[in-house]
Amino acid sequence: MTPPVSYSKDQAEAHDRVAELLRGMGVDLDNARLSPPRAGRACVFAITGKAGSGKTMLLARLVEAMQEAGVEAISADYEGRRRKDRRTLAVLAPTNKAASVLRQRGVPATTIHRIIYSPVYDPEYQKIADWLSEGGVCPQVEGLSEAALERARIFYETHKSIPGALAAAGLRGSDFITGWKRRDEPLDIGLVDEASMLDQRQLEDLQEIFPTLILFGDPAQLAPVNQSGQMVFDVLPAEKTQALHRIHRQAGDNPILDLAHALADPELGFEAFEGLVEQAARRDDRVQVVGRVEAGLMARSPVLVWRNATRIRLIHAFRRAYEAPEDALLPGEPLICDGIELPLRHRKKRLDLEARGLIKGAQVVYLGPGRRRGFSRLHVIGAEDPQVSAASIVKIEMPDEEEPFIPFAAHMGAIFLHGAAVTIHKAQGSQWETVQVFAPDLFAAARMGRVEAGQPLWKRLAYVAITRAEQRLLWVTRYRLCRPQAPLDIGDIAGPAPLKLDAS
Image 1 (tube, rainbow, N blue to C red):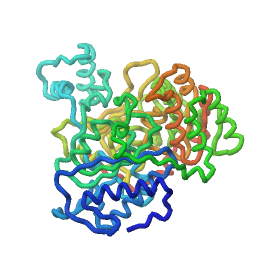
Image 2: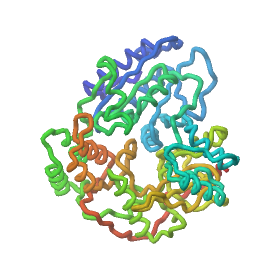
Image 3: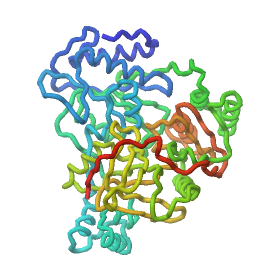
Image 4: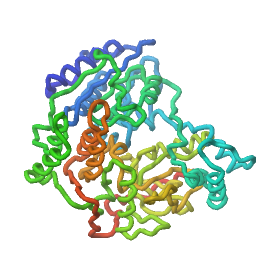
């Protein structure tokens, strides 16, 4: 067994509680012995702690100890020969970036979607797809007018793209997906990082797959939008949770973490907090207060905002600053995958796209057009094999317009939004070396006085946004954009010829 020589008291207690749980499931970490899985037994246990409390280090040491005991780590690519007495573990993260951070620490992590899920489409929208592709009587769908359906039909006749047609009707990719269900056979032990991003339905799906689940999450982050401010581990009984309180990274005198933890003061208001940011900036250049968004950083590190309207305006300003054409993308523009638009009968093609990291929320850099119409050459950030060419539907949202502009659309494939700016909610699970936080949006949230799970919403937003920064935090104070000093470039991510994924 790997001795926890560097554990703090709370980490050692968490390790011992997990070891006791696993012993009851037939995995003895203390004596490095295994016994066959015990049918009918199931357990969910959560380890919680704020940024810097050592959750990731504890997760890595537990994985190492399990592997030393003989538990096999599996991935979506290979599981090995099945045996009744075999014990397995899977380390899961909700995003490619979060999984890649774990892999850099030597933890064999993959995304939840890679190992479990595939999208299930709403039957009402499937009727529209069937009508567009097969003809027949135009369906009546609640919320969509005859004019919207006619826009979809006209678009489909020109582009032969069902997701593009549905986008022309004013629908987002996430409107089509009612859930995710991928694997039928159960697995064994699952460790889930960034568990604050899970909703109840995802947890239930994971419980169907893993009899033993160990969740690692930050209680100060933002809960999923459909969870009413509550995270899945908040409802677990006390004996099924362990909190880490000591902040290990604080020993490194990290001003970014200092600011994040200052938000726990219930008396701290927005103006006072902004004063703390200014003080930190005077002491340490890892924190900077700036009056403009840096367009040059937006290509690889999106501006973090609260409001969608702010996000769209900043994206539009970014494209205008780089003189991007209205009907095409420039190589180097950042994108966010908004889902895979393929009907259930194309399961294999969908799995191929997901297997390359093109899952909802994936960060992507556009490298240029593919050889076929509607295809894009892409770099999937955080993916183990990042270069890919895939059928794509790209939507550019425009200020003060309900419908996005679609520069090109494949027949079917991955759908993308622009990624130069993202909401703080969607940034959870990701980190960047440098992060720009758009402070006027947080000020707006503070003035609205909204509260989530007993805490002012602006504080949760600020905490999540700040802790996305690995090395440097830029606190942007004004609605201005600094023009780039150089054109967009892909030299930093250029690689071998990408694998083509034909989804049309």
